[in-house]
Image (cartoon, rainbow, N blue to C red; front, side, top):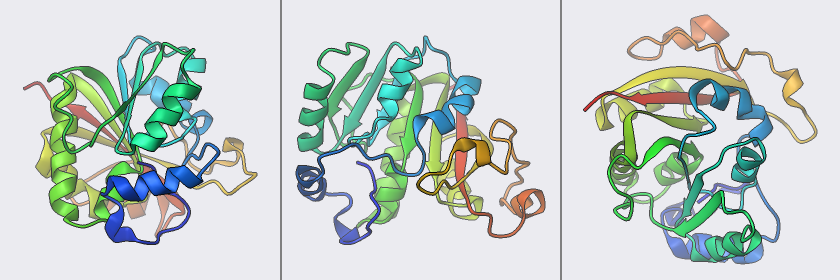
Length: 233
C-alpha cells in the first residue's frame, strides 16, 4: 500500500479495491518518499543483514529489491492489494530472499508474535491516516507492528509527519524508545549527495517535538524518520 503522487479519493486509502484499481493501471515500479540508496546508511545503522525484515505496504516499490541486492537475506513484503502482490510474486519468483503476501497491515495474525527483527514503513501509516477511521486504523496497525517485532526489534517509519503529529500516536501505541532522523526531500534527478542534514545523526527530541525547530529550523523540507526500538516486554 504505497501512496502515489496524486491524492484523490483519500477516503478509499484503506480499501483494497482502491489499490487494486491503482496497481492494475501502474506498469512500473514506484517508490514514494525515498529510494533505497538514500536510506541505506540509516538502515545499516539500525539493522543487520541477518535480520528478518518486514516491509509493510510494499506496493510495486523496488526498495526491497535494493535491500536484497545490498546483502539482506530475508525480506518479507505485504500489501493489501492482491493485484500488486501477484505481480511482485511473479516478478521476483527467482529471488528466494524476497517474499510477498497479500495482507492487511491492521491484521497480521498470519505472523507469530515476535517474528521480525525490523519493520519498515515507507508511507503506509500516512496512507491510513488519510483514510476513513484513520485514528482507529493507525492504532491497530501500530499495535500489530509492535506485536510482530521481537524485543529490541526496530520499527523504521518514513513519513511526512512532523513530531507534533506523530510522536503522540507512536507513544500511545507501544512503549518504544524513539529516535528521530531527517532526510531532505529529493526532487526528480537529485542525488543523495545533495543532502543538507546528516542522515545518521539523530535529532534531539523532547517530549512534544518542539526541539526540532531549534535543531534544523522552521518548516524544513524533509522527510521524518522515526526509529522506534521495542522495549523488552
